Amino acid sequence: MRLFAAAALILFAGVTLAAEHVGRLKSISEDGKTITITADDKDMTFSVRQKDGKPDVEVNVPAGGKGGKGKFLTSLEELRTAKGGGKKGRNVRLTTTGEGKSEVVTKITGAGKKKKDAE
Image (cartoon, rainbow, N blue to C red):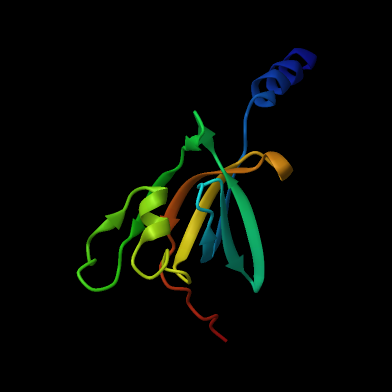
């Protein structure tokens, strides 16, 4: 039994948990190092994963707007500079790894329209 517990501890020690945060896009820093969303009337700012000094994040967000139907924004720069000022208010889902100060965004996808709670 002790051997099993030790093996499980070693196996899960290196696992990084992923989390998801859904909210309205508020801003993306010019250097691409941070992204801020508003969820439940609270601003949440996250660091964006970096590789060689550049944002290293998967982006797949519907372009929307005129002529954007069926098209997707596929880079952080496209999302930041999209017509409409980064389309503030766009619903996004952020996938993150790590916890606390080491939590970083690894993926940004569209979250669709927020549905009102049924009463």
